[in-house]
Image 1: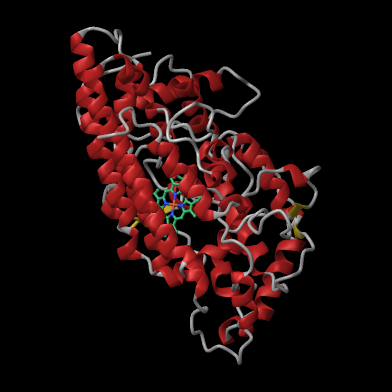
Image 2: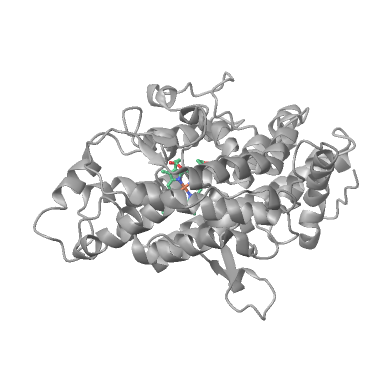
Length: 468
Ligand code: HEM
């Protein structure tokens, strides 16, 4: 593979793109699979270089339904006057979804960008459908997703190699348009195209994730420099690794700042009550919650249907592999995992790979096969230990501060009352009680604080010298 190792920012993704194109090449020769997109851009990384086109006219019914959804639907648990006024419009919209024909997706099989758009549209429709149904909070009967949505979504997801549910790609990577279409693509000229709540807070949340993604692009070059080092013992190579580790600390700081920028662009209360409930997937309410069944899809209870999380961003996974963060608790490291750490889902990060499209997951699988991680090398060569540990400490700080965001936006907000949308008597009481029942759960029904603490502590255990 042709790898250019100049450390210039413009070179960043030429390097990783060449890596991805080799993965893509493999797929081209595999006729059973649709050719995946080379969706790595020299500046925008895993975000595609141009906004996705809308679907062609034979799929207009899907595009129309998505365009109408925000005006016709409110969250099923929302008992505000506005929501009650929309009950009929919502029921009609869902009835239209049930009476739609199952469209043939063969036409989309040769165009990855259209497949990505189809995934986005159908996954948004599925969440609009499932989460707008008015249900009692203790209703455990499964939610039936109509076959007009479920069958094409599963087909398209198989082509893309991604879970048939709303994923990080659908809310962030693929969900953007140019602010001014006449201007070239730049981070300042992009904004989220679809919103559940119609609030700028929701847009701010997606854009903070997109900024983090962009800030992390430089990581891929650093990792690629490392992965393709011809020699890992000579002084020049070790010096190069050392410099890249120093650079990595700055990249992690930039990512940290990007995550923290969510505080300026998204109100915790709006996020918790008006945005986040739309994301809940089939397992969001824990093992006893109502699951989703995909009509017309055999064994649909086995499908991965957790819903979106920034834990599905490939960039953070690549960083964890490079530094050798042991989320699965497979390695003997100090300090030993706490009882809480042991209770958390150790396979969460790995499971989140199912929610990435196939080329991104395969990129990670390729990194998994590196014979040596940065940690292994730093263990062998003492001068690398300090810059390595500094990078790990940066990531530990990022996870610490991210946890504070989760506390502010989720745990604290779970104790508040829903927004004052002309509440009708105290009918929101049921919603509040339901929200407070049991532990606060994140994607896949995990207890949020256990999971995030386990990730932070796994990062801490990656440090070589625990005492400085
Ligand atoms: C309002 C802001 C945010 C909240 C409330 C939040 C909350 C959470 C929660 C609860 C999880 C646990 C897994 C899950 O349930 O999905 C999680 C995981 C994660 N979040 Fe966030 N998050 C926020 C913003 C961000 C942003 C802007 C990023 C940057 C892309 C980010 C990156 C991650 C990553 C990488 C994980 C996987 C776990 C880890 O790597 O430690 N989060 N987040």
